[in-house]
Length: 142
Image (cartoon, rainbow, N blue to C red; front, side, top):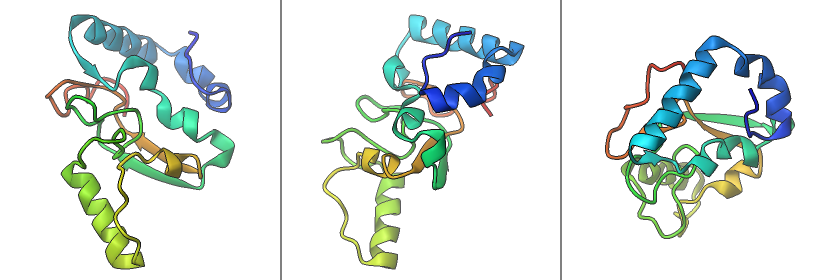
C-alpha cells in the first residue's frame, strides 16, 4: 500500500502498511472522512512524521488522540495551530515547563518548532471524529 509519509518512516514501516490490520484501519479512516468531520484534516494525519524524521528523533511524547474541536488538531500531539486558544492539557504542559525551567509561556501553542528539533509528538490514535474524544481508538492504531 502506498502511504504518503516521510521517506525515513516509510522505509521502516513499509511492512506494517502491507498487513491486514493496517488495510482495515485505512478503510475505516477513509470511510470516517467521507461520512463526517474528522480531525486532523487529512493532509496533516502524518504531520508528526513529516516534521521529525526517524533519524532525528531525540524525544518521544505520546498523546492519546488528536484534539477534536475545530482548528485545533494538526497532526502533532498537544499542539494547536497558531491563534487557537490553548486546551487544558497544553496549558498544563506550559505551566510545568515554566515552573521547572523558568521559561515563559509562549504566545502560540503550535509545537512544530519542537518537532523540527527532534521531538516526535505522536498520538496513539492519529484521527478522531469531531467533538468525540477517543472515537477512533481500538481500531488497530495502538
